[in-house]
Length: 213
Image 1 (cartoon, rainbow, N blue to C red):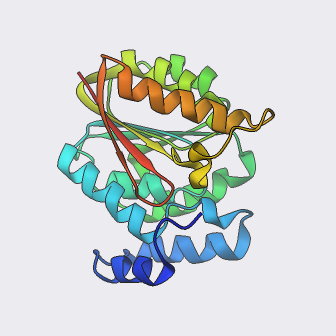
Image 2 (cartoon, helix red, strand yellow; image 1 turned 120 degrees about the vertical axis):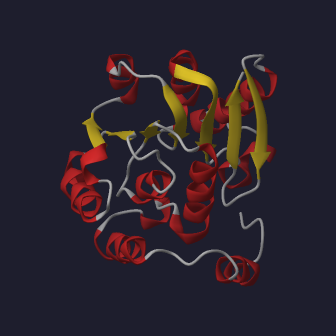
Image 3 (spheres, rainbow, N blue to C red; image 1 turned 90 degrees about the vertical axis):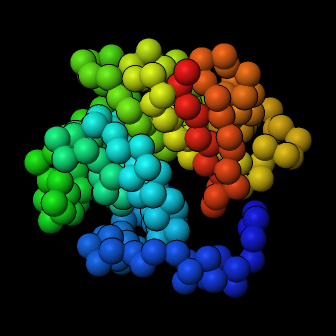
């Protein structure tokens, strides 16, 4: 489902901050060499992530779902000079691709890659986080949220991607569609959970911003 026209999307990109050169190269190589390149955050959402990070100025960032590393680098743009970004993914074949671009950035030594299931990795991280970006398997969104809330600093921000799921959140739920079922529950949880305050933004496929109280 297209929420706005491609022409309007182009206008929005043209009137937002320019995509940094390194990210443009990462974007291009992802489309050339990696399966499912539409999973990339891309120019406009990347600039949104960058702006949010610059407003928050996080010391510790966690990303759940690395893909090729585009969003991680956008989040690093606002990271405190002594900060760290930890990113988790299950795709071993993308680790070297990610690291190549991380090391070409100013934050290479501050980015830590974790390979494995996020539900297993998160409990091993002995840190409090100021910013979290959830962009992985939808079936585990509720689990990720419950694991992360106790690890957040007060006032920390949890960003959740793909929460509109191409408009499927408005369609009749199919019996075998677990991803949509979980996202419907997740969106209700974020709205009603007293530990957070939430706004759902219609950016690309839906981006929720939740502030931990």
